[in-house]
Image (cartoon, rainbow, N blue to C red; front, side, top):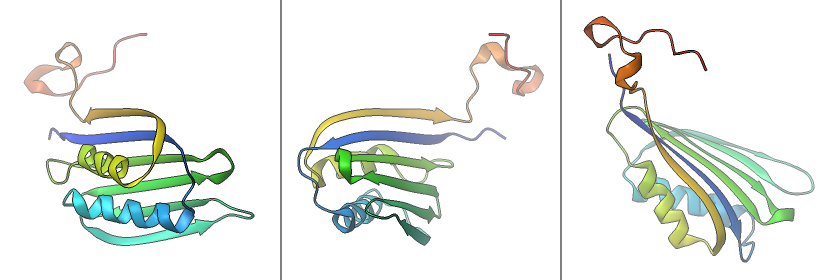
Length: 129
């Protein structure tokens, strides 16, 4: 079986820190905007500030970690298969938050390069580094 998921990773430094609750609300709006579906979620609040939030999606997961003292937000969004669009979730966050600096990547998951495929397109051991 070949899984063709997408994995978006965002490191964002905000111009203005709106508060952890506003960040969480923006994440939920971003999940909704890209057509993904929340099955359940949990939030861990840290003292004096900061949160880690996990949304389990029908399509896989979305996580957010806040560091208010640095006006920094870390986001990870993964889908298994073709349902949902992690890139669109990140684009929605960019529209919803005042981001002044970011680092972003979108990676295909579960698809091996042809040089490490074996017979019948099955994965083989990874090449030596």
